[in-house]
Length: 402
Ligand code: ARG
Image (tube, rainbow, N blue to C red):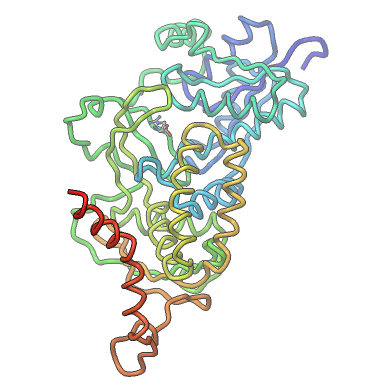
């Protein structure tokens, strides 16, 4: 690296767009490009091959970060404690990884003395917002370059650029789908999915088996400590181990497939197919653990906070004051969310079949209809009368007035 040239840190995936962006940015700005590839559990290619490809495409430096454990513990677990589902369904797969990527890009920029960051997003999606709003919050002094969106790096031009420079990228084996995947799930769009009447073909799926195929169910016990999953079948495990195991076991039962039209922040409705077997199984279990351990009003209020949390994260505001304040609320509300949930995975569904907790609010003696009942039903008579009193008085007035 030279002392006098400006430096750009590029979020590098190893694909066509970001491979071409290396030389494209260098030509347009006269800067040196440093590629950073982040492993958030997307699988596929070897990360060291990706690192070397960046150098072959002209990067002056190339770094790979294994962020899987960090992603699991600091991004997926908070999404789980928030039961985060955008539009009540989408577990925020892509939206969760962007703030982590931004955090590492900013770190590398500081370490290498770079004054610019770059991403390969288009101008139509949410991810440009997540990158740039994140950068603005963490490093307001850093300039952003978005070559695909802002400097005419269309797909045709990218292919011509790659061919002209002899870059080591295969531009022929293009999948009809745009795919983004990580430890929390997988998002698939474009191709035949852009006609929203078309059902998804089976080739769309990778994390999940066809739920309609006959197979034996799988039953497991997930242990939680203060809202955080800490064990499977009695064996203590890290969040990364638990999510990985659940992706395999729930994925094998076809759990977590989702086909939806969603509201993007930029105003477009888009059709996306998701599969998030581990996320959906864990959220199902976590919600049930909360049902047992969280007091009624706190649980009702938390549901509103959860929806807002999911919207903020979807909308790229991970590093925002409201998100931070909601995190503090959720952490407080998660105290005592401790115990075990038994889940049955089968036929595309994760179904709770049992729960136990040392911090349970379920009181057998209050709930039972058998002998041993300690609930004093005589108290209910007056309670019900007073509960309905305001409506009763209003109804009497209404009748009088009409
Ligand atoms: N619509 C999702 C989101 O905004 C996923 C975005 C990436 N999807 C993709 N298939 N490349 O979070």
